[in-house]
Length: 317
Image (cartoon, rainbow, N blue to C red; front, side, top):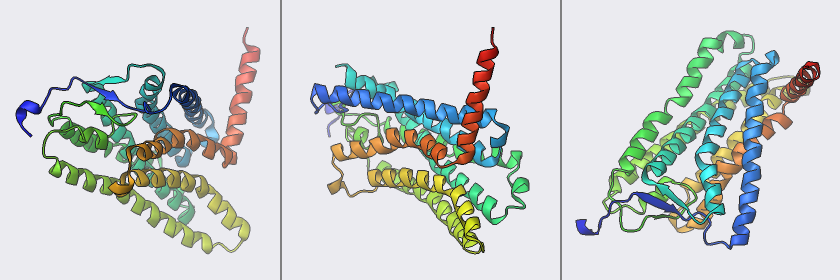
C-alpha cells in the first residue's frame, strides 16, 4: 500500500457492542457491572482471608492469593473501559491507552497460564510427596515459583505490544472489539505483518501449551498416586484438594483456546467477543466462588474472619 494512504493514529474507537440496541447495551452494562463488583469483592476477600487466617498460610493458599491478584488486575485492565463504552457515546481510547491495555492484557494472561501450572505442581507435591511437602514447598521455594510464574508475562507483553504498535495504521481506527486485543488491532495495520503473525502464533502456542503440558503431567502423576490409595475416603480427600484447581484450569483453557485457536472461517468478530467475555469477565468472577464453595477450609476461614470483624466492631467505642 502506498505510503500516502497511511495515517498517524492518535486514538482508536472501540466498537464494543455498538451493533446492539441501546436498551440491550444498558442491560449488558448492568450485568457486567454486577459481575465486575462481585469479581473485585470475591477476589479481595480471598486475599484478605488467606492473609488474615493462620490456617490458610500454606503454599496452596499463597498461590491462590497470587491468582486473585492476577484476576483483579485482569479485570481492572479491561472491564472499566468496556463499561464506559456501553454507557456513553464516546468509545474512543488513546493510542497510548490502547497499547497499555494490550500490554497488561498479555502480561496478566501469560502470568495466569504459568501460575495455574505452578498450582498444579504444588498439588502434585502435596499428594505424591506429602511427608516432604513442607520442606519442598518452603517459603523460599514458593516465592521463587511465584516470581517464575509472573516473569514470563513481561517479555511476551513487551515484545508483542511494542512490535505491533510500531506498525503504520490505515485510515480507519475502528477496533471491532470491546478491548485492544491483538487480532482486531492487527487488522488496522498497513504493512506486511507476516513475520509478526508467525511470532504471535508460535508465542501463543508456547505460552498456552507449555503450562498446559506441565498441568497434564502433574495431574497424570496425581491420578496415579490417588489410584494407589487403598481407601475410598482417602481417594476422595486427595481428589477434593485438586477439584477446584481442575475446574478453574478447565474454564480458563477451554475459553481461551476456543478464542485463539479456532479456524478463521469459524471465528467471526461477534463470536470472538462472546468467547472473550468468558475468560476476561466471567472466569475471574467464578474463581473465588469455586474456591469458596468447594473448599471447607476457605468457608471456615471466611466465617472466622467475619466473626472476628463483628467482635472488633462491637468493642469499638
